[in-house]
Image (cartoon, rainbow over all chains, first blue to last red; front, side, top):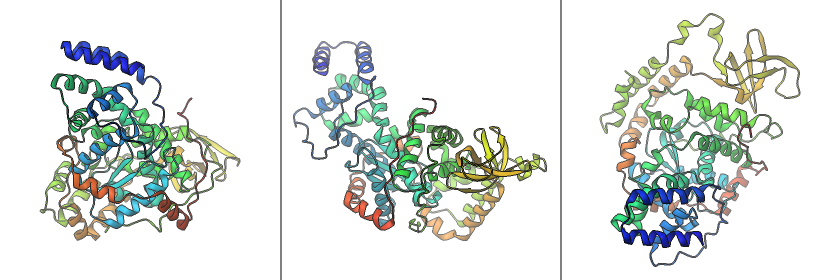
Length: 299
Length: 184
């Protein structure tokens, strides 16, 4: 009801060519209201009917402004970001590796509240140490980070952290907050009709959104989720902390960690936060698997 | 000094094994020269306490309390098993929670890395060639790759297949609630 009203207002404003800054403050206020309660997890239903074909750009914008992004729209946004990221760093051409990472990642994803999402995992060509998530279940880690891992449990922990970003819709919220308003201003001004144009306008330049840091709390939350998902999947729950410790040993001046350290709190801070969160809560948990014997070694 | 060899990583086709060794060497050299400044007792320390914790006789929360260790204390990490790490501090050896202590980068580790790099010159060089960096600039400039997305989607794993994998690996799903934000 409210979003209907919002769109009526938006339509009127665009016709009367109101100043962009007035528009911005109006929507900022509306957005704040809408974003205040955390977006409710929608029931996952891949068979959800596609949104009506007419005016897809309008629908997408409406959904974003209202904070009610459908599963289909979430996946569409994620695919655009993932495709851009892969444009910068393609998949490592190793079928065995990619299948292995999808097997482990998919098993970890089954321990979440979104087990039926089409989760995609990929190792990308880069010697940087980093991992990325995009909305809708797109998860990547660099070959450089993969090389640092010692066993399957560590892989599960890293994937679990990224899965956490998707579950809590961290990047989607980031887009809604920062780019949504700017995108709307641009769209009303330039009258973008094409859905892809709207999408790209929303996302910004290329895959830059993955280089934009989330807030620290989002990273700490994803770390906690990574630990829990590893534990749920039957792995050593302390494997993700082991990876963080290892990354913490890389010199801060090393170029391979410059983007990671720019967009994440330092591993030592992350370990400290995890330590506080875990406390005694894992004491009763039987030791999990490291999966070292199954770990796929890069050629 | 540490920047120079890393630039080499972005050059395609001109990277030699020598460059990689050079890179690793300068990385090792780039570690802070803390070791020389340490006292004899501290030279054994290889880890730091991330939070205050109780040193216990055995890796068990119920076991006898040997002492209390402050946050920031430098200790010697001996071994980690499950949720516990065995450490020596001053003249006591006991166990603390694994997440209470963080190992530090050691010179020895850097040197062994150097050796490892030296042992696999060719494979590493081939893998590095053709690699693109992932800084803000090239992420911004990236354009959508239809072909890569299609390839990625081709690896999609079904639920049943993942469950089958877990079963054959002996991985059993366990119940565990999400962890709350500390202090809440």
